[in-house]
Length: 137
Image (tube, rainbow, N blue to C red; front, side):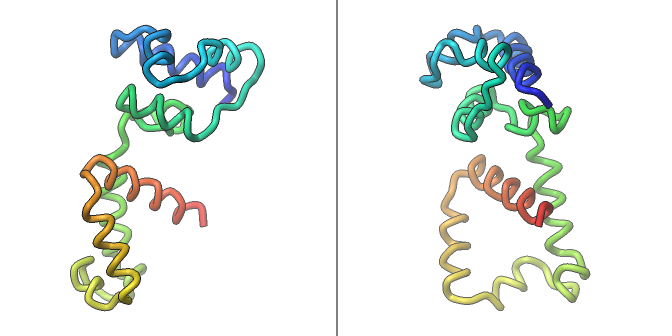
């Protein structure tokens, strides 16, 4: 995907959400020339900027990048994570996530508790990002 297409995806999503690109950029504290730079100067946006835009438009970064046609991949990603983690090939047995948490270290248990404290939307994004990382490894 080229950066001009990313710019087009952002503009299309703004149109769908009935918000101007200027309003998006202002609310996200992104410089006004951002879209122009994507289209004409082949500027590559940072992960932070793409995250701000995706959160503002309530879509996934993958959607804005053109990696998926589904604006929010949360439902499918979470079901895929549950299926993958619970599968016998991954776990080595038929244990559920709850069963497996009994076997984790104190550090892992602490991390799990921190994740549980996240608001649902952030927890879903975290799990989705973790799943993407595991898929690439």
